[in-house]
Length: 614
Image 1 (cartoon, rainbow, N blue to C red):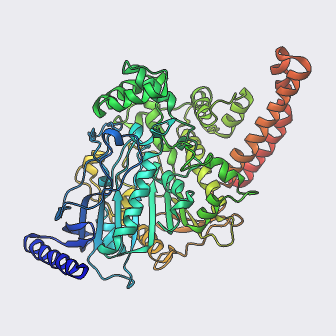
Image 2 (image 1 turned 90 degrees about the horizontal axis):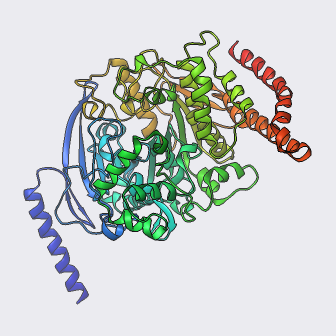
């Protein structure tokens, strides 16, 4: 009986395959999930024609609606066969934060897209696979925004882009089993499991998988790299402008913003059960509208933070503590991290993105933005320090020390570049270097570091003309071979990159895809890119002409990770001693008398700065 059933089943599949081929106009994959019909995209890049097979909008998880809202994703299972994979699936619910006309309220959104080269596989077991996790501040974006056809063709790799739940829907954590948070991270993991199970049928090699991401996507790439249960799902990782030790990317829970939202929806908001019932019953459209309203209130906007949380499952403790302990306590999370080959890096002027917040206008002329030295000292330095050190009392002397370090002494009234450097160092540059130091601090670790330098002709976010290096997100165009829709997502019409940018794009695509195929970015590159290690700290500058450097941001890392904490500890001990010996009324005054003790440190810092510049 078993043999008869098998023959009958095989015959049925063969008949279905023949019928499908007769009606299909594009490529077809016969998978264990069903017959999948795709589309062949033909195009041209830098004078070269290409053809790539696309399979778009494939569901990898059950729609997270109804009782599945705020829960871990469940596998989708078999597809309706034949499945038409010629259109992108819905984007996950999100507001139009950047005011570019992209908004979605549809929760049935957990889809992935596969781009397969038509050229022969580089290894018998299949093409190397690159899975992209998009950025967008955990609140916006989709796999549709970064089509992988040019990268797939150029590097002869399979590229997969995914959607995952965002904002409230992707990261609600109120501390009970019905909403434990990190839904977006679990979505990504399920997509990676789907790739392991199915990519072979598309010609992929499940033993050569690279995950890569940008901004919040890069943060999540590095978070996936410290979840030991992910062993075997991927072997390489590329983090573009984001690492897990950026303070923006993690919090204890999201109960307070959830409570705020429930209160504004006129729900009972004093208990977890009441909050969850309110948010579970509201429509996605109403939830997004209420979030948009709250975002207009500057006192509440900063509190609406739905990001990855310490849930006791994906993270047993704060990942920042896990990295900090690595010097003396090697947890399994760090062991797994060091098993992964890593490319990590930043752009030349990451802080340029924060200029939009100075003006409060994401569509205005960035050249009109002004930042004075006094504004830096009295507004922006305290504001961002408060973000960086939530819940800590920051002594005035600490603010003065930071202001000293980030003052434009040549023109006090023009502090725009120092604002960009300050925010870039604080949020991107220093965390990136510190993350790579932890990763590379092992004889078996394979680690590379880059800085993407060039000022491109067009930018994905508003960028002033005086910004002389790459802004945040600028590398995405070259990485994906200028394949995304500039008009739709950046309001840039009829854009054709200049020739030198095409050359730049080819070099960075070669680095990325060499890494995916061989575990090393080198091979046919313009320079040899050495591995990063904590002693030599070598990096590549990716520019019009690539070059190699050493000790990138070494001074800034020392300032933020050594000097400033020691000053704060010194002031704290002084305050505690004064409180104990003289009482609270004299504590602050006693603390102020300790300032001259660290002014000598500041003097040393001045000399160090001068020496490094000359």
